[in-house]
Length: 264
Image 1 (cartoon, rainbow, N blue to C red):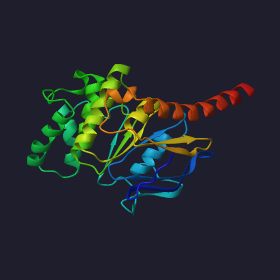
Image 2 (cartoon, one colour):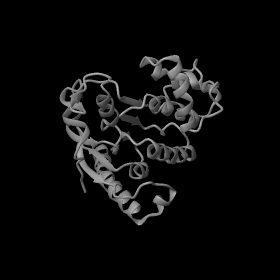
Image 3 (cartoon, rainbow, N blue to C red):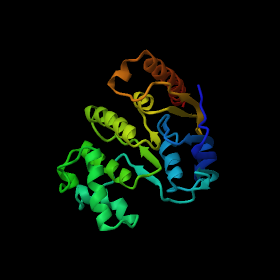
Image 4 (cartoon, rainbow, N blue to C red):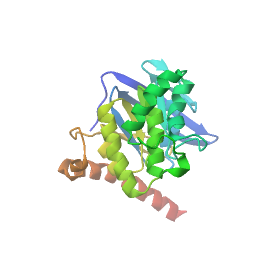
């Protein structure tokens, strides 16, 4: 089950990354289309976050290229926003100031910031908390703030690194469906790294499975579930089939890794 977007917004060609003698991944090739959500999943240590940061231009590749709209990425660039697992908020700034930060860096005027920031605060459900500091709000609200900051610059590409991994299970589920709602309202290219198989299948149009040492693209699974998606999606027989397919693919690798540890 594979699919290749006809007009890719992001292309990764022959990507490889090493840290000293450790080869993290190699020969990674993928394309992500306009308004497509690609979920990346794989065992811990397979290089999911490293690959995402290479796509953002934060870390250089050792081999290969990342292209956005046909142009090579060799550093952070306009049109790409990143949402991190641990919120990445400035503790001395209010919710409003944190959301406005990206716009300030982009050179937006005070009038533009005053007009745009409230819209994105409302979009993520934080209206009424504009003057609060991060320590005064919950982890889920902090992640909403980080998401609003990323969205406020209206990126063409949104990169998300385990964005709900630092919150409790109940909040995570709430944020998943909030993210689906936000994406439906403002669809854009999104690459989403997660450890959760359910989350990958629920959110993604495709799920890319990384496996091996060094890791490579083992499979790209097309998620043929209808949109918009909501809690009813979790009850579909097709959701269960896709989840089991990805689970089986990953668990075979995990079992092999356990056997290697035991042998040592």
